[in-house]
Amino acid sequence: MKKASMFRTADGSTYALTFALVSSLFLLWGFCNGMIDVMDKHFQEELGLSKSQSAWVQFAHYLGYFLMALPAGWVAKKLGYKGGIIAGLVVVALGGFWFIPASQIQALSHTGQVSPAIAFTGFLLGVCAIAAGLTFLETVANPYTTVLGDPRFAATRINLAQSCNGVGWILGPIVGSMYFYSKDAAGASTGSQTLYIPYVGVAIVVLVLAVIFYFANVPDIKNEDDYELDGTQKVSTLSLWSRPHFALAVAAQFLYVAAQAGIFSFFINYMTADVPAIPASWDAAMTSLANHAGILQNWLKGWFELNKEGVLSISNKGAANLASLAFGCFLLGRITGAGLLKRFSAHKVLGLYAVMNILMTLLVFCKLQWISVACVFLSYFFMSIMFPTIFALGIFGMGDQTKRASAYLVMAIMGGAVLPKLMGYVADKYDMSRSFIVPLACFVFIAFYGFYWSKLSHVESMLIGKEAKSH
Image (cartoon, rainbow, N blue to C red; front, side):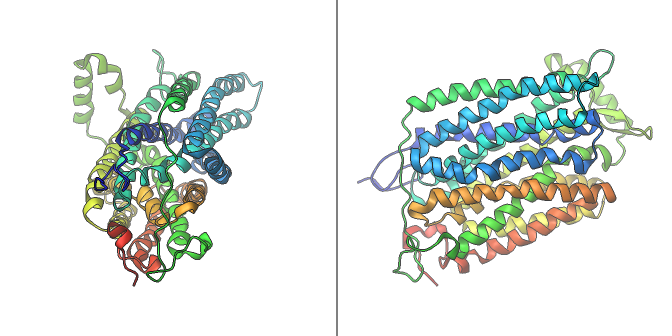
């Protein structure tokens, strides 16, 4: 029998191709999330919303996760991994196509036939529907990556798959900047007329993926129940909530997604309001570059503009494109983090990255000019491994309860619906820099969970696998 490895299980089965196919789902929801994260500013300007009010976009997005997490876990348990994936793809497609009538409703709001609130609600329904479909995919795909090879490398595999998520997050803001913040020749915004286009594109792509998965080999591999409380006793008969490493993982995931959603969704607001004045030489250099950029000319134009005070600042379009750079930092963190997790204990890496983000958000809060701006980008890097690593630590050793545990961890994504509104409230009352105190508090708990995980689980490290000894 061949030795178990990254993509080979103990019985000699190899799942590298299956892993690659499942990883495409991570790219999909990263792309959808990336577009969501640059949408807030669009509605603030199109519908006259405050930062706190525009955070209803995140609320609707994460509400979809909360409402569908347990049903998705039930479907996955009944239909298996393949059935859960196909169900999720179909729901995402329905949500994507809904943006066509939602855009028509918004057009009616411009003529006064419907109120802006109704138009906004129409888009929120589409956002919620897509999130509901993504819930199926995340509930299934995240734990599935952990069983496609040696259990010792579960955290590494899920972080590798989440690297594809990072690629999607880079592409999402670029597409969002093109369709949400587009302008006509006269300089008037046309975003409300083109916002639906990328979502219809997503709907078509996911239907193609659903067909591919229907004919693909996606075996329903069982997760081994090898977690021990005292070195000998199995825990399969115990309640999920009696396992502190899982229960606190749900809390940590709630707070992580809260911090992530807040920073991601208000990135454009921060870049357009709290960044120091842009030197005129930068604008001249960008204009010159755009004039010689060929097919990239339209993408490079319009990054800077005069704000209401007459100061040269980053435009909405420029900030949306900078979000892609931030997600590049996020992707780099995922890739390098996967390498670290193969060599070092996952819980210790998580704790270290959380401490670094406590420092990053504190420096943003202190309003240290360009140092704070750099720290916003670095916060993306240090957030990169948190979601998949918390997930892997939380479902460690859950055996036949893995899908149910996964559903609760996905449900914890609801944190992204709640905390951004608080961050928006602080930003409305003070400014964007001061609002970073909210994610800072979240990272404090995540650091605690990471460094304390071995005591909670009674296992030294996930890297030790089945041979792990209890304390």
